[in-house]
Every structure is written in structure tokens, then in C-alpha cells.
Image (cartoon, rainbow, N blue to C red; front, top):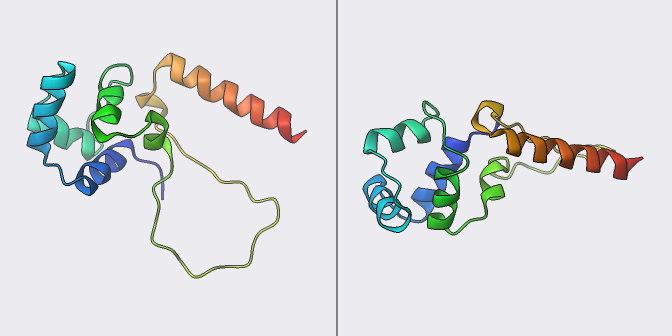
Length: 119
């Protein structure tokens, strides 16, 4: 399944038993971030980007998760085990438009580091 920041935010909110209204209230009270119910819905449905410098850290703190948690692949229900593939790499796809320039540089540096470790 392709990465979706909105889906991960929604799944996390629902797993915590929070409503969109509760999230809106807590974001305002704790972090001074004002979002409408429509904005939250648009974020969760991938129709609005999340401000990676302001909104994403607030969501992460509110949901008590590290920011990188929201960039991991979504976990699917366990499938029957298959034969292991040799030298198989995991792939994480990211919505590059949702990242800041700094986030992109950090991802590039991590990729370069991983490639250098493999050689």
C-alpha cells in the first residue's frame, strides 16, 4: 500500500478514540493551531497538505508519536508467510510535495548514508 500521511493521521486518531472535534480543540488549546473540521477531514482524506513545520509536530505530540511514525508504511493485516526473497529491500513511498525543503534534504542524506553503508 502506498504511503499516505492523511491515512496514518486518521488511523492514529481513531486508534486513540479521538473525534475530529476533540483533535481540533486540543490543537487550539495546546499548540495554538486553528483548524476547522473540514480542514481535518481534508487532511485525513489527502485533499489538503499538512504543514510539516507547524501542524505535523503538533499532531505528533497530541497523538504521542514521533514524527517519523507518520512516514512509515501503513501496516496491512498479516498475510500468510511467503518464501523469503534474498536481498529484498523495504520501500517507503513519500508524498514529496508534503515535505519541506529541509525534510527532503534529510531524506536524501539518509539515503546516501544507507547506500554508503551497503558498499
